Image (cartoon, rainbow, N blue to C red; front, side, top):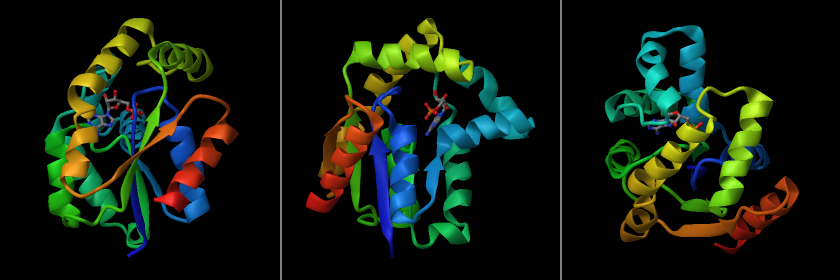
Length: 189
Ligand code: AMP
């Protein structure tokens, strides 16, 4: 069955970086809905055209579109032996759709990467300079943090109620320090 792990945490907490590393260490694919959506925008697909303005505003792309995209991805061969989900689910509707798709209890655990708000905003503004992401300006960043609190944070309660443990990992410090904490969390839980 392999390992099926999901990443929770606010934008800027370092989910993408850490998930990529962890996926490599575990030998499972890193499935990031943000990366997949940005790729659709770049390629100008129908999905990309629908998602572009929504993403630029920092809002959530409609659940049905994202759920269909993820289901397709999970049906690919390399996901048969586990995966690391990053950026999905983003709300309770998506979490229920995932449970339905893979079966309740199929997830091993959720890693919750935490960092304080000023650190998050600072990192996202830095990323705007480094990567030129359209959704990394201050107004959009504040909106994305608000969307996280309203829509995504309730999953921190949803999963334990559905027998998936949520393990919090301190996301402050260097990439190496955070990665070491995550490996410890995986071994201990
Ligand atoms: P991320 O790279 O995970 O921060 O995602 C960037 C943007 O893509 C988000 O601000 C949303 O607009 C969109 N997005 C990514 N994942 C999802 C999702 N699971 N549901 C809805 N929108 C998403």
